[in-house]
Image (cartoon, rainbow, N blue to C red; front, top):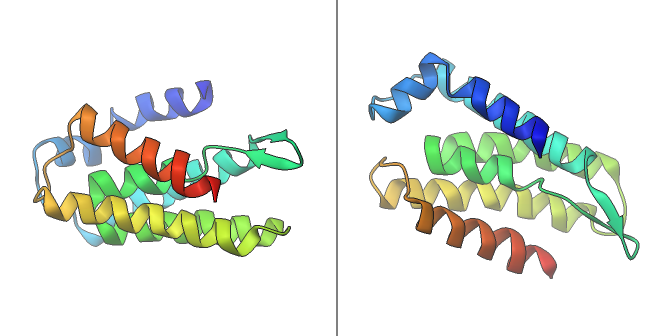
Length: 140
């Protein structure tokens, strides 16, 4: 988590982040950059997981979910595809379902972005979405 916090801090110092705060429309290069950054967060979330009862607990879906919340469904789906494809290549019994869930996290985050008309979600909305999606839906 410390690595993610440091990377998030660095991200808040970029021009893309200031565009998001000012609700400026992101161009395709900025959307691509966000997808890559949060896709890498997703990969890191997979690799930094810990094994619990022969399953790996991780924060893989956090990257795509945040990407969707701050950049929309295209950014969320892009980050989700990066993280999902990586998870699928890791293999295992849950490879397909985990990969699909990662992409869905980004898309659903993006749908919340659209519903809020591009406004950043408040803490309550973000926590409920992340806790429900990552905590409940990924446990099945």
